[in-house]
Each structure stands twice: as structure tokens, then as C-alpha cells.
Length: 159
Image 1 (tube, rainbow, N blue to C red):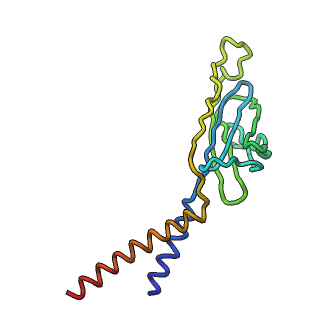
Image 2: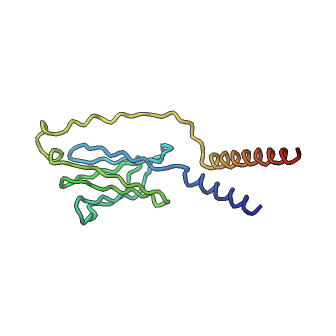
Image 3: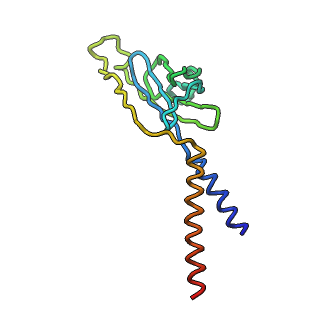
């Protein structure tokens, strides 16, 4: 009995752990880098802590700040290389993204600038289901499967 209860507790914790993640979109709009972040459910990470690390082996912090109310952070890099962007909502969600910049990005000539298309806004019409409902549904599913298993086991024992 204790093993069964422990199993349900661990399964409940697993459901909570995989409830949602963080999606990060990094776009190059020369001479700026625009970072947008949201939870997988579509809720933006407003006020999340952002840390930018400059390229190189030292990985020194270039800039830090917080995302605005729309989940957006903009910075102006000063040299080519692979920049590291770390986003932390300070509630247990942390995401690291990288963007590679070449010399063309820093070129002042508009002819050499890469053409960056306007970001396409895609609206997903997904019904919002609160986290507690997902947890309850997961637990109900697990209890239902366990009930079926024990029902079949009890029925086969009587024959």
C-alpha cells in the first residue's frame, strides 16, 4: 500500500514538472537583437531577468535587465561571435538561447545588411486549461488505469 501511495505522489510530481516550458524567439534587426519569451501556454514572461553574455572564452556579462510587459528585451551587440542570452523568471524556469552574429550584421551599408523579414504573428487559438486541471486530469487517468489493472487482477484470481 505504501508503494502505491509513493507511486501516485511521484507521478503527481512528474505531471507538475512537465506542466510547461519557456519558448524564446531571438530575431536580428540590425543593429539590435530582439528577444521575446513566453511560457508554452502563451503567457509572456514580463519582468523576467535577462542576462547577455558576450562572445569569447571569458563569457563576461555584457548587459542585464528585465523583460518589458510584453515579454520583450532588446540589446545592441558590439562585436561578432556567438552571444548567449539567459532568461530566468525567478520562479524555477530558466532558458538559455544563443545567437551567432557575423561581420555583415555590423556593416553600416544597407546593401550588405541581411534582409530580415517582419516577424509573422501567428495566433494559436488553444483553449486555456489551468495547471490544476491538468494535474487533476493526469491523476484521474492514473487512478483509472490502476483501477482497471486491479479489477482485472481480482477477476482473474477468482477463476
